[in-house]
Picture 1 (cartoon, rainbow, N blue to C red):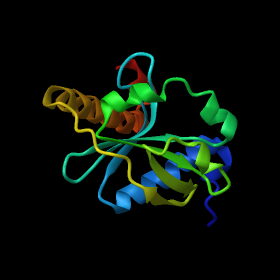
Picture 2 (picture 1 turned 120 degrees about the vertical axis):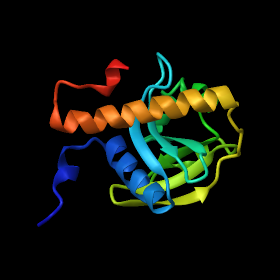
Picture 3 (picture 1 turned 135 degrees about the horizontal axis):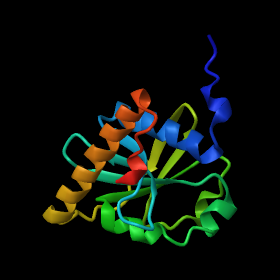
Length: 152
């Protein structure tokens, strides 16, 4: 049976799906569209096997990237930051001091690891707790459509 779930996803969501599949293969657990603080929503937050926290922003076009004025605010919520783009994206416009992942709807390749800037212990605890609550509410919403992780 063909996988037709990709037909209803937006381009950035397709990139996020491929990124999450790849990161899962590396031992990370991922959640999409997590709000670490009011006014910010990361495309993918990943929790690694050693407790590391990565944020991946998925950009489907040059215009999508150039219109993003908030991405530097995400740096305060992760140990490493990455862009995920498709193979046709002009990657040379992305900042050199950030990570880079090439992705499509089915997988990804980590091209450049973002520099590490370890979170302070108190911030790490808060992020992991938010991650856990978001993931639990997403799972609960599968059975109870009245539940929304956006409420927290």
